[in-house]
Image (cartoon, rainbow, N blue to C red; front, side, top):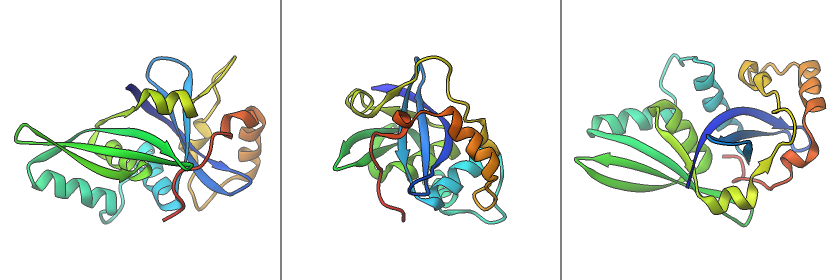
Length: 176
C-alpha cells in the first residue's frame, strides 16, 4: 500500500470529465482518476480553502462521523475493475476499525475534509499509475480553477504541458 496526496484536479478535454490526480508520497508516480463534476467541485473547494454557506454532502458525512464519536482514519483506493476504481473509508470508533465501501471520488473528498491519509494498493498504482519523465506536470492551474469559470486559454496552456500518455489509463465511475 502506498501513501498518496491529491496533486490536483484537471479536465479531460475530449470527454469534458474532471480528473483527480493522486501522486505517490514518495516518487513521481501519478494516478489519474476520472470523477463526476459534483465530486470535482467538492474536492476543488477543499483544495482552495473555500467553505460553502451550507454543508455539502461530504461535509455532512464528516459531521455525522464526528457526532458518532468516530474519525476517518484513512481512505484507500483498493482496486480497478472494469475501468472503475473502488475505494474504502476506514473509520475508528472506540478503538475499533470500521470499513466502508465508497466511490473513490467521495472517499477523497471526505479524506480532505477529515484531514485523513489517502492510500492506494500497490496493484492499483502498478496497473494504472503514470510515471512522468523530466519535469513534473504543472497542475497549479487546477487549484485556481472554478468549475463554472474555466479560462480556456489557461486550460490550453495546461494541455500543452501534459502528454497524452498521462491520461490514458481508464475511467472511474460514471458521473453521479
